Image 1 (tube, rainbow, N blue to C red):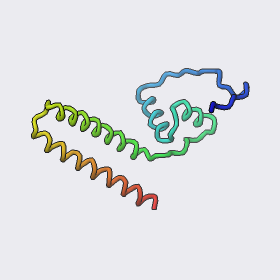
Image 2: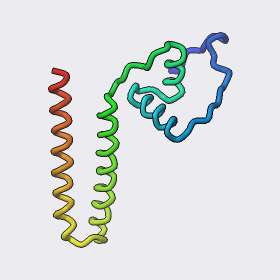
Image 3: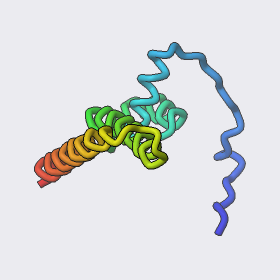
Image 4: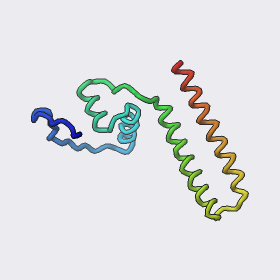
Length: 118
């Protein structure tokens, strides 16, 4: 099933390009991510509605998610190398501790989220 055709007056034909500093880009990207929008749609909403789009996820959750993702990527890479025999077996103990710590963090976050929603 394809998208419905837009009327000519509803088509976005004009493109506006702006330059941002790294800090500005990071702020726009984080705000857009928090609202569940692309940066372009976030800017469009902000300009035409005049308010920040409602947040779907708290900024704290986004930063925690990013950190957990980094930990998960590192853990995955370490596991891969361990399975290839590139790490000493003593590292396996640290790996188990990291998995346990990651599970504790995730459980705490989920419990906090349930508590906040309940």
